[in-house]
Amino acid sequence: MKHKLTLTFYSPVHIGSGDQLEPFDYVVRDNRLYTFSFEAFVASLTHGDRAKLISLQKERKETVLKDIRNFIAHRIPPGLLSEAAAITPAAAGIYKNKFLDEQNNINMDPFIKTMGCPYVPGSSIKGALRTAVLNYWVEDRHKDEFHILNAKFQDKEGKWKPDITRDVFKYLKVPDIMLSKGITVFSSITNYKLKEKEKELEETGIQNIKEVTRSVCDAPGGNGEEGCGCQCECECVVQVDEEIMQDRKAKTGRRDLTFDTLWKSLDFYEKRLNLDMEKWSSLNGNLKSFYDGFKAYLEKEREKREVKVLRFGYGSGFEAVTIEKIRDTKVKYGKSINLCEGRFPLGWVVLER
Image 1 (cartoon, rainbow, N blue to C red):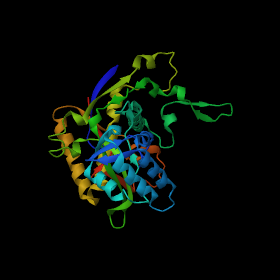
Image 2 (cartoon, rainbow, N blue to C red; image 1 turned 135 degrees about the horizontal axis):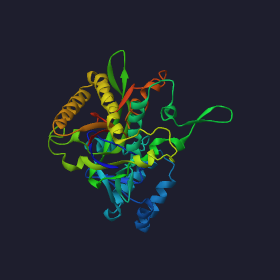
Image 3 (tube, rainbow, N blue to C red; image 1 turned 90 degrees about the vertical axis):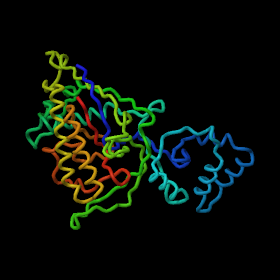
Image 4 (tube, one colour; image 1 turned 60 degrees about the vertical axis):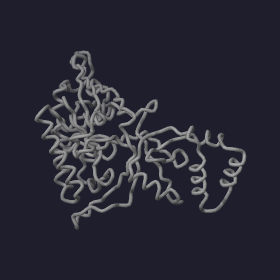
């Protein structure tokens, strides 16, 4: 059965394409980021400018990359530019300040797209749902996820091995979610580390520029009360093929995956939200404001409809993508956090049933 849900980006979400925009792939003008083909740019140059570009490339001096960037920025014709997305003032400031820095390539991480339009892969949603359900089903911390799914078999030597053909999640289908072009913006992402002795956060110096979704928490009006409109929302479809799963011929471990199970399991992310709020709010004023606003938003929404929280994408954190009771306790995690524009954690969304 198909279930249509409304997905609202409460905080910015970034899902990368695996590619980066390198310095000779884009320019920033008037708070917009434009991409272009370097080959087409070279072909558009006059004979004299092409000769100058070749001479710049042959130079051995340290400023060669800076000189080429300057050359491109002042000569690329508007007709060759393809608008990628808006860029925030903070991200544009980083681009401007580091534009002539020989040691910084100022690479940009775009959102995953198809035919120029951003989209949320269904696999991202499905992966987050899977994590929630496994946390809901787990009972024994000495088991792994395939034990939880009853999806293991014994080989000839008697050793237990995963059997992906018995993975019940093959009956869960989540299509890709197409987004409008205007829903994304290139933003600065700053990493902070936890100084436990001082009980405070400090910047690590790791700074990126990533294309993220617009979100309720940074919309005009504060906490999305006004101004966010439909740009922060999209439709999500979740389908569980329960009849096929229950068929006696179906080769599967568990047979108790239902939409109600999925919905109940999302309490896992509510718990994570509360734990993150407790952990980070006292360390940073921006984080306290974010979590207080998020809790108030959820309380207000729940007066009108049934909603759950979910987290996925870049910056979700180790605790949100692992199974709590079988997590390796020896691994040190949760010691840093990435903030969009220095204010918002990434990846928090709200699902309305």
